[in-house]
Image (cartoon, rainbow, N blue to C red; front, side, top):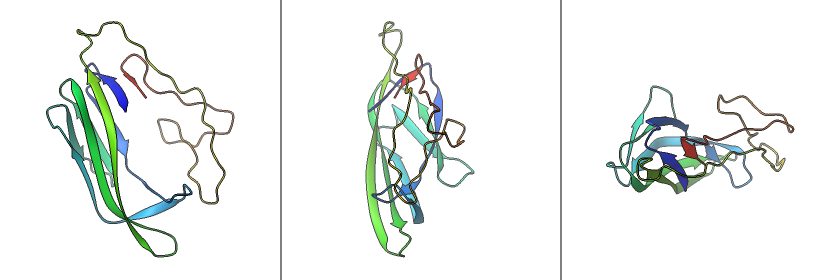
Length: 139
C-alpha cells in the first residue's frame, strides 16, 4: 500500500508489462486502469501510452485495478489483473507522521530484466539510489 498526504495533488504513473522473470512484455490490446473509489483516487489517461494521472481527492483507502493481456516474447498471450493500494491521509488530522525513503535497490540480473530507474526514467547504476516522497507521500 502506498501512502500519500492530501497535500500531494496528483502523481503520474507508468504501467508496463513484465514477465515473471522481470523482462518486458508488450501490452496487447486495451489497458484498463480503474479506481475502486473515485472519491479518494481519480485516474485519467494521458497522451502517452501506458501513462496515467492519479489524483488524490479525499482521505481513505482505495485501489487501482489494472488489467490487460500481455504478449510475451514467445508470442503467448497472458491475461493479467493486478491491484495497487493507496492510503490517502489528511495532514490536518495526522500532522505528525513518518515518511519512507528508498536508499537503494537490489535486483536480480535475469535475462531481459528491467533495470531500476530514477523518477525521471533514467537507468540507475548498481551504486546509485532512488528516493520516494517523504513528507508528501511514502512508498
